[in-house]
Length: 208
Image 1 (tube, rainbow, N blue to C red):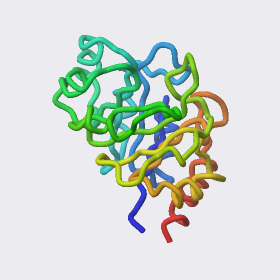
Image 2 (spheres, rainbow, N blue to C red):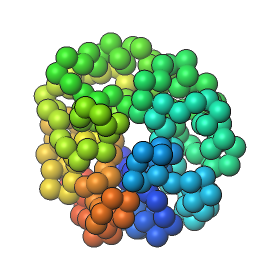
Image 3 (cartoon, helix red, strand yellow):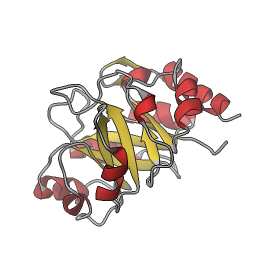
C-alpha cells in the first residue's frame, strides 16, 4: 500500500508542533480564522514555523478571507501550502503563488468529480464532514461510501478521524493523506502527545 501522509491540524503552539513532529507527522496546519477556537496569530505562527525541524510542511487554513488578509499572513509566515475552507473559487485560490488544496464538506448530493474538475489547479481535495453553520472541525465522521473511486485529485480525508478509526478509514478510502485535529486533542487547541503517537501508529499499521 502507498504511504499515507499525515497532517495534524489546529496547531496553536510550539509545544504542540513539537508533539506532532516527534510523533512523525508530515505536515502541520494552522488556522487563520477568527471564529475557530484554534486560531493562531501571525506572530504565533511565525514562532511555530521557526521551531520546526526539516521536511515538515506548513499549511495555512483560511475561510472566506479577503485577498488582503491572505497576503498579510503570507508576508509574515512561511507557508508551504494553502487550504481554503470557504466558498473561494479556483481563481481566488490560485492567486497567491502557493500550491493549495480545496476543502469540500461532503453531503449526499455533493458531486465530487465535478468539484475536482472545478478546482483542477488544486494539489488535492480535502474531504470533511458537513454540519450546517460550521466550516469544519466538527469531530464527526461522514459516510465514506460517498467518495467515488479514482477521483482526478489526490484525496485528503478528514472528518472525525481518531486513533481508533483511522486504520479503517484508510483501508476503505485509501486516501493520499489523512488530516486530524480534534481526534488528537485534550481540549480544543490543546494537542495530546499520546493520542498523536497512537494516531501515527495506527496509520502505519494500516499501511502494512
